[in-house]
Amino acid sequence: MLRVMTMQAEPDGPAAIETMLAALRRAADRDLVPLVRRIDEEGLYPEAALRAFGAAGAYAAHLPAGGPRGAAHLGGAIQAVAEAGEHCLTAAYCMTCQAALAFVIACSHNAELRDGLGPRVAAGTVLGGVGLANPIKTYLGLERIALDGARAAGGYRVSGTLPFVSNLGPDHVFAAVFARPEGRSAMAVMRCGAEGLRLGEPGRFLALGGARTRAVEFRDVFVPDEDLLADPLEGFYKRVRAAVLLLQTGMAIGLVRGSLRLMCDVARVLAPANRALDVQPREVSDRLDALEDEVDRLAATPFETDPAYWRRVLEARLAASELALCAAQNALLHCGTAGLLAGAGAQRRLREACFLAVATPAIKHLKRMLAELQH
Image 1 (cartoon, rainbow, N blue to C red):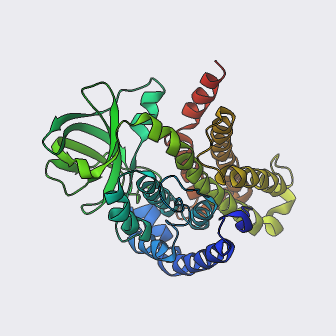
Image 2 (cartoon, helix red, strand yellow; image 1 turned 90 degrees about the vertical axis):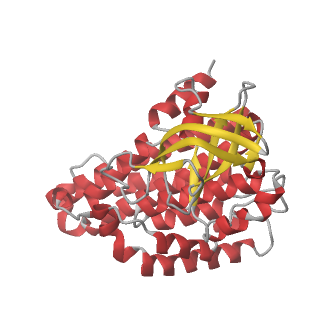
């Protein structure tokens, strides 16, 4: 599993991470586990758990030390996401959104945002996410930047629509990218309560319905210069992109752990039949160990600029999604018909794994990105 001993460079790093994880487990048992079925079936937003995880330090464990150019190690945050993901992927996904937002703010050269909003996001007192699906697809040549910004006194006027942004609410914030008339793009913090910004409903999802995924419409929204994270975007995006993808692997790690637990729970009773299945818990466990080892190595240097490092990040993110699908599908096969009952963990984990497979960057996006690196 992810090695806590290497999670931070500071002498007290391992102890601090262990303390954070222990507090997170207590909060999960109190504020998350009793609500997992309601989160899945009713779309309940796990706000109390998310705030408690922030109070435990889950969204601060990975932030650069000593400013935006300092060293960072993502292991603690990935492990925190995985802990929640063992129980509920909705909560783990919202944590990933929150941790990514905290990271991009901490990496910005905008000291006002770093010192003002940044600590509140890292503590979970202000919740939010990142609207990066559109720019990721734009860099793949599949879309154009969906938001347009026109220069105004003291900032920009932004218009357009983002179809899917998660972990949102009336008082939440999120990072998003808009195109400038000069032909370049910028990233800024968007505030859900801003005049002209409207949160819509993109539709009811069959998995992660409690993640508060919203369509966001911008109608001439004023974004002040004080809220700019990066302008121009490209260099900043390349600096933070590995961290965003690596944080997502925590969701898969947690889901695979939970799927393995389901397999083991039925092993004694259903062993005579389950022994005939092609995929056994040992194989899934071995693949998980290999994934966690690789993620741990990559998490230690998220600002690495070597193209070979970026390829390994993409491969790890792809392996995480594929292993989640394998583990969840085989958990259902091992559980049998009982795994399809309403409220059963096996069918929920399979639906969650399907979300991981199609959420940006989806498996198809990752394969395309890897193929383009060969040219």
